[in-house]
Length: 530
Ligand code: RAM
Image (cartoon, rainbow, N blue to C red; front, top):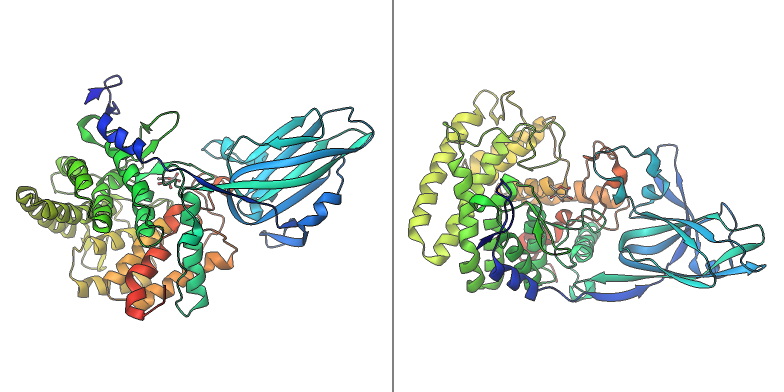
């Protein structure tokens, strides 16, 4: 291993062998052409939501002409990830000025209505999918070089000239993905909503399976470790593209920082590089992701290669526990993710993730016959469980609290249940109590909701788990989701961690887990047809 950058916390130590393996597994993307299906008009209702209010067949586009200020919105019929081309021509006198277009892409209708100028959030405005283009000579085939994630494309003619008008003869999207949606058999649960939830999950996953498992094809278009774990789980029950999962695991393990910490996120262009972001919970979950991969493939070589990386992530967190044997309160520092909920204190949840990850560490150690590590993890896990109860369990309230302000959140209860700090009966009481109290610090991402459903299943509340899935993902469907969203807070539908929902991602892979949950925990028991 050679050090490749200056000494600092994020000095990268590339493991060339691991990166070569990752490179050898780079997928060949499949593509298909999709023309627009309709021409639509989108408007904001008096309740503030944006909707398609009028539609016409896409065929009429051929006969339309556009002058200064005219607009048309194309609806491609479903979520697309791909490259757009337009065949343009002029009508009237000879083209005596360039055509000036404003193009806007939206995964949902609201993005077409929202104004980019109004965005003042903290992540880059450059994520808003829009272009200003000049075309000097018509007829022309305009092939946009960027990849977009969208269903709706608005073309606004900023100007032509008084002497000619623009015609849009053809439009198409070359949609790309590492996998083919039709390779996954649909599931028949006998319940229309659950079937639809499964279908949309698979579509969401497919759109995010590109050169790596992207978090979202609109934003950030890259590989995040926490997202990967859930995507890979959904992939093992659907597309079964084991190579892509393996590639991603090797990418993380191939670029550790000093001490062996792995990054929360990696870039693959222009060449593989880790983001200088370490998130404790994501790093810990590497072992769980590795175990899931092993369970799905029985690929012992990969397990042997990547096991030390998984165990190292646990060691690092254990080495930094405080005197009470609990994780230090991360406060506002972005060193632990858990959820995007405003004001969420993450200390208790982080302890839960640590204990949960140790269980996976033990499973990995058992497969490899590494008894020493297994015993060490068993001992540490018991100490951490006891410390968790001593520090975070509030006997009077019968709930877990977190941080100096003794915050009660959904996340803390859920992660303690998943950590199996209590037996099933007590965990069951805890989840029921949490639901009836409905702590104010709620879950806002499908990532956290996934863990809630997992906790319900762990507590034997399977029917309730299905009901809650219908309430959450089902509500997203009712709100028009073609693919599931990065963030969805049923109590505040415009919520965004970024300052405005215009940069939220509406095809976000960590929300694709209903297909995993339905196929893994319910299909066999309920005799559902796949
Ligand atoms: C968001 C990303 C990703 C998530 C990180 C922590 O910005 O889209 O999904 O893992 O945050």
